[in-house]
Every structure is written in C-alpha cells, then in structure tokens.
Length: 272
Image (cartoon, rainbow, N blue to C red):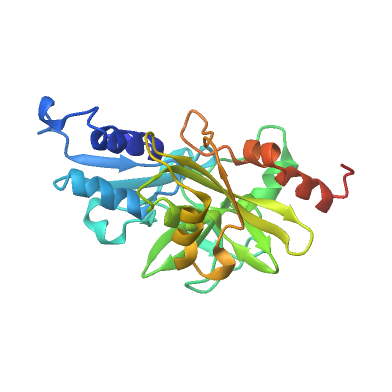
C-alpha cells in the first residue's frame, strides 16, 4: 500500500475514533506499508506497526530531476533503521556535501544530499543558470535536501530552504516536528521560522489538534520541555496545516500567512 504521511495519520485516527473497524475488512493481502515523497516520522511507523504488526515497511527517495523515486532505497529488511531513507539504489551513488556543493562532509555531519546515477537529468530546458546551481560537478545532482549519514544509512534532516537560524544555532524543523507528532493529541504539525529582533528567527509550531480533543498552550509547552531548550518552539499557533496534493506541507504559504516571508525579504534587502 502506497501512502503519504497525512494519509497514514488519517487512517490511524479514523481507527482510533471507531469510524473504521478493521474487522469489517479483508486485509490478508495487505502486507506492505510504503511511504515516500517526504520525511517519515518514526513515531508514525511505530504507531502503524502497533495497529498492523504484520506489515513490512519500506520507503524510496527521489525527485523529478532524478526521474522519480529509486535513487535511495531503505529495504524491508532495514525496519530497525526506520526514519532513514536508506542507501544508494542500484546503479546510484550518493554523497553529502558541504557549502561548495562538491566536497563531502564527515559522517554524522549535516550537509546537502547529492545524487549520481542513470536517472539524473541532463539539464533544465533552456535554463543553464538554474542547471549550474544544482549540478556543480558533472553528473552530480544537488537535491536541496539536508541530510546526514549514520551507521551507513542516509537520514533526511530538512529542506535547505526551511532551516531556521536562531541565535546562531541551526534548527531543522523536521526533527522538531517528529518530536511533536508523538503527542497523542496532535493530528499534524509544521514548524517554521518567524522573524525575531533579538535572535534573527524563532521556531513557531503550527499545530492541528485531533478531532474531539483539546490541547492548551501550556500543555504543549510542557510536552516540549523534553526538547533541548534551543529547539523548543517559542510560539505555538493552533490551526490547520496546509498540504499540497502530494502531501507535502506548504511552508511557503505558512510563512506568508504568519510573517516568515518578512524575514526573507529583510535579508534580501527588500522593503516591507
């Protein structure tokens, strides 16, 4: 079964509310739960396996410029590395590079994921400047995804453009979102950067609460006390989390709605 993160969450929520009764369905042939297109919260897979303990789990990673998924693959045998996107797929090479877009960083360090393989595009049509920005050496495609390598597996950290810099510290929203999703009252969450006169940016959490439940700001902040202090959201907004048709959070829309674009404009010297 191919799923996106919000679909899996909706199915589990409907089961918990009693709207979907598994006894009414024939599920013997439903053997594999497969997610792609976005980082996968480990807490979601743990929750899914508690409801469907006999399901295997797998994920693939890719992008349009690499002819879709398959460049990186986890494999059902690696369920103990849930949260990772996996290792290079057949015929592919991967590396995690620093700011120059070429030099590999050390294992455990965060950098940008680069791909090389048979599916990498040749160029953006009639746009050599855009091509040069993501292909700084022949055959290697810069994905725009920040990642790190641990135990030989690649883990997505966040999109480069979504990284929040607060008081000189880099915050990766996906890591904070994964933590918050473990709260049993949270249906969905997005973390974005908002402008702050002292710190440059602060992390703000847009939280969608499960139907029929209530979550106060104090409860939310108390839950986040387990996070390191610098990673705790400084602001919480209770609202729906917008997603596009492929299930990805529309963070540019959220930044525009709640003020994050003002910071980008300020950094680029654009008057507000």
